Image (cartoon, rainbow, N blue to C red; front, side, top):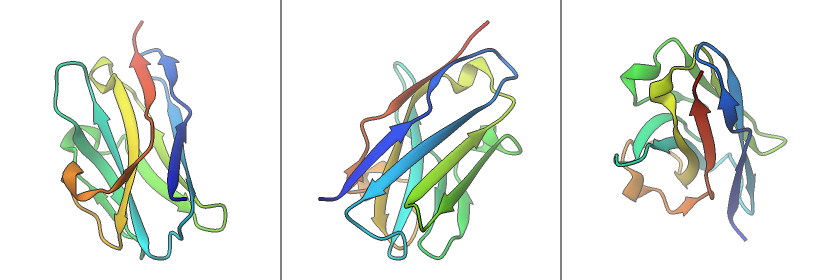
Length: 123
């Protein structure tokens, strides 16, 4: 069964850091890309970062440049979103999702989604 499970969210002060994890099961990261998306209350879901099956990283949200990075441990079937210098505007539910091989900024092109993890940045 293809499944994604996010973890690592929580409440953090502005300027703090969090690392989100996405555990994949039922498929190989050799053939699937993993994208991180986020959705804030009242806003559309937006792509943040993605890592392709060939380990190419793509950034979709300009607001995270220099602050967020994506990485993976293929053997453990884990994908990570390291978030530094967090801002209140980063508050959202963060999702990981998968699609074959290449990345896309469009949520509708991803077929399997995790349940999401809440990130709240507040003093």
